[in-house]
Structure formats: structure tokens, C-alpha cells
Length: 183
Image 1 (cartoon, rainbow, N blue to C red):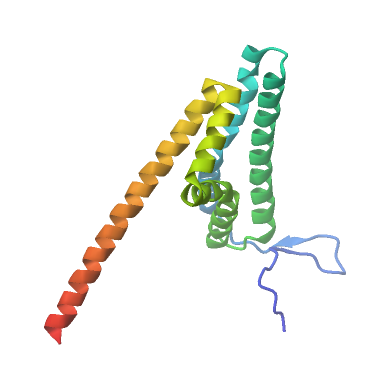
Image 2 (cartoon, rainbow, N blue to C red):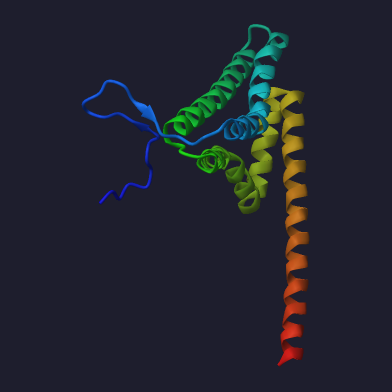
């Protein structure tokens, strides 16, 4: 039996030099893939380019070099994530659902650094605050604004999570009360 989970959409018979694509991906699947990729990755690409573009105000200094390298890495990693997603989806997606599912999974893996930041903020907030303050001090106001934005964004997420848990507790209490009345 064929126990493989992933099946490639290209079929290349041994006795023929031409390969066939057995994919059922339509233009709609490609549009959704492009839309997800654009929404998810354009922010990091633009931030990387913004860092590289803004390095001129630091002149020829160590700080300017570090910002330039950081911007190049951010842009390159984002482009590589996009490239890997495109190549993987072209090779393995046999339907629109496969393409969208693969894209969401790959972008989730790409987002693990944000999840690590959130985890560190919950586990050791003082250490993270000291580290981000040190980074902000060494790189100036631009990084400080981004760190403040990230911190504010995480605080909003925490508030939303608290509200959701409160609603879940209320629903559980009401559900238990209904079960009690029914019994």
C-alpha cells in the first residue's frame, strides 16, 4: 500500500520524459494564496526595507552597519519564507483547500518568534523589559517605537484573552445552571 501522507501533484512516468501536473488548484486558490501571503508577509518585507533605507542617517558607524544587516536579514528571511511557501505549494497542493491549508500551516510556523516573545513576556517580564530597553537604548528611537508598539499589541491581546476567559466562565456557569434546572 501507499502509506505516504503527502502526494506530489506532478506525475513523471519512468518511460516518458514529460511530467503531468495532476493538480486541481484553480485561479481562485492561487488568488487566496497570494492574498494570504501578501497580508501576512508584506509588513516584515517593508520593515526590512525601511531599516535598510533608513540606515543612511547613521552614516558609516557600527550602529548603521548593525541596522543595515538586521534589515537585510529581515527582508531576506521574509522573502525566503515566501519562496519556500510558493515552491512547497506548487509541488504538493492538489486542490485549493490543500494550498490554503499548507499556506496557513507554513505561516504559522513562521510566526513562532512572536509566540516565543509572548511566552517570554509571560514567564519573565522583568528580564524581557530590561533586554528590550537595552536594545532600544543602543539603537535609538526607531526601535523604541517598534518595541512600544509590540508591547501595546501584546497588552491588547492579553486584555482580549482575559475577556474571553471571563465570557467562557459565565457561559459555563449558565450551562451548569441550565443542567441543574433540567435535572
